[in-house]
Length: 249
Image 1 (cartoon, one colour):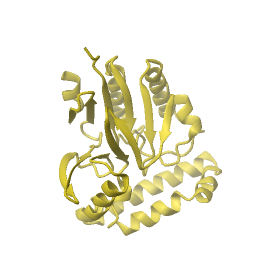
Image 2 (cartoon, one colour; image 1 turned 120 degrees about the vertical axis):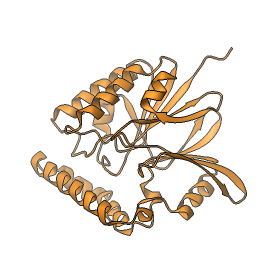
Image 3 (cartoon, rainbow, N blue to C red; image 1 turned 30 degrees about the vertical axis):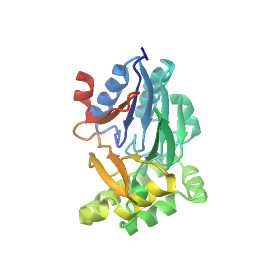
Image 4 (tube, rainbow, N blue to C red; image 1 turned 180 degrees about the vertical axis):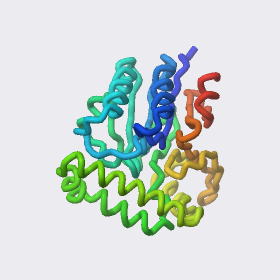
């Protein structure tokens, strides 16, 4: 009999010192991962903001310790940058025992080619955000920002969060969601039938047809009210559920 194997996907935890309940939920989730877990994929926005691997705050150290303990159990950890923690670097990833993966990236999920994305690049109708994303992902801009004192970076992060809240409040919901043409192009470009992403905070399983091909898009949810987790097993079963439901299963 083939041993049971599981892989988990999460995103948009937005961990922050002001929301200790989310941190507790995440640390509890890591501790409760079954021993037969193969891998955990964190598809962006693990943190509400990231000001650099040299951040001396308590939260990054606490999370790194918990992730390292998980990796030491033999569970492979993979991290993809989100729009809030795009500056997370190799030093912090090494402390956590996790590998940074590209966005987009294709993995072999128990025999199924699966496309992983944070999801923000699919929101092509949000022109203001896409312009901001291009700016902050520029290597020269990022290097300049990370060279600033911690206090300056903390102030910038707070300003960026405030700007994001304002932008979300005044933007139409359709603009904040994915563009269907961009989704279809992602399926075509990467030659896959399964796409998993986060970012929109709208957990759902979408069944689509792309060029006559049956495709599935699974959207992960945020961890503001209740953590959302996708579990995949070696038999090809996929379950998107709340954290407490996953623990009870």
